[in-house]
Image (cartoon, rainbow, N blue to C red):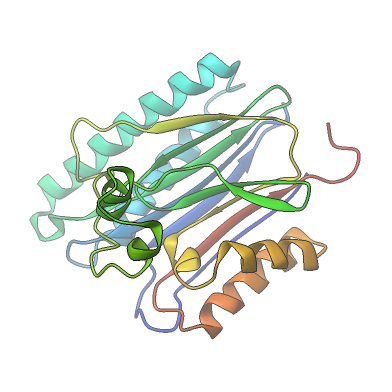
Length: 246
């Protein structure tokens, strides 16, 4: 496996509220995650850091993440814990009231691939040089599309397209959507909406097919998002299967 991750402030924001990580262990288990913080008194970065730091600590506290059922339980439990930690922080720091974060992750082992998400950061799988979105955005416009009140085209330009219906630190109790994905794939890409709001899935796919390294893909995607305005923080985590990987 070849992996690379990166976060960038973008061209408009004065500070970066995103956090991103790729973790692995000697059992050939990988955990990728992106958290896009928002709200509060410049505390979005605190919320996303709480998530990524707790995730890292818990992952490395395990000898193995175990079978698929254990991984699902791990995700559900850790989301509850991360949510509680954010609410505890806001209680102790009233200025940060209103902060929260999206969360998208992927767990890949030799036996299974799971995605999980809360909010509107995206998880994609790459198969046969094509990109496929796995996760579903928890946004107001996506809800309106699902009920037929908006078309997908109308949703793209809706003035409230970024209104979240679910986020860590905003909902209690919280639940994570989990997706079971075919293990036979060419790669995993996670990103914050700072990428997907700036460049299309077709443009992302083109970069994936043009660049030969994981680092090259991530750096080029971020450059392209910035070249198109970079009006938000941009975070990308990418795992690329190499020839010979199981």
